[in-house]
Length: 245
Ligand code: GLP
Image (cartoon, rainbow, N blue to C red; front, side, top):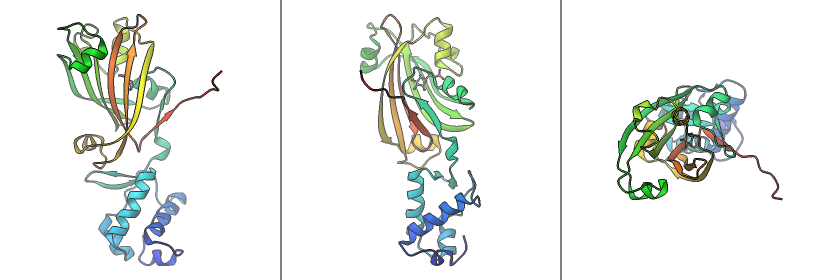
């Protein structure tokens, strides 16, 4: 990022010229995945533009997924080839999905406890009065990077001891002879609040995909009610579609 290099570029708004300079740096390998960009104020000084211009350029590339910003530590070139993929048309677990794509899933527990269900949870899980739930909330990592926050609620009758769930909820259910066979899943776009953004290492307000899954056992009972927030800059959701017959 040399002084004057922006003015040598084509005409057009300065932030677009800065963006195309960064893009060509990535294209020709001068900027590599995970490389840190200079601090905003250094970029502004070196290039002789305002910090507002730098910020606008970086923000646009972050929104496109070309760069990513980590709260407090700066702006980096994305590992775009490293976006994780979640299948939308198969009932699989996070652990399974990551392993089948050669990635290493990780977990940081935020809550593992038994509790009384909220009214909503009791209704969704179809619990009798007085029944308890097991709460499993965790930060999910892939190859060491946080990608999602996931809060699962299951009937305590299915998993009485939350500490028995190690890395995978579905493995713990399978060990207890329970195999979800059907799920209803709902996706929505959200922007992350400050606390979640900090856990995920992104800027407050960053885009995420909220997923709600309700999974059923073969007898039709609900075994899982899970809310997840997946980082928008790190995850793709893929479904195979066929023509309705
Ligand atoms: C996905 C689903 C969750 C499910 C989880 C189980 O992430 N969105 O609803 O609870 O998989 O994954 P694991 O068995 O790795 O805990």
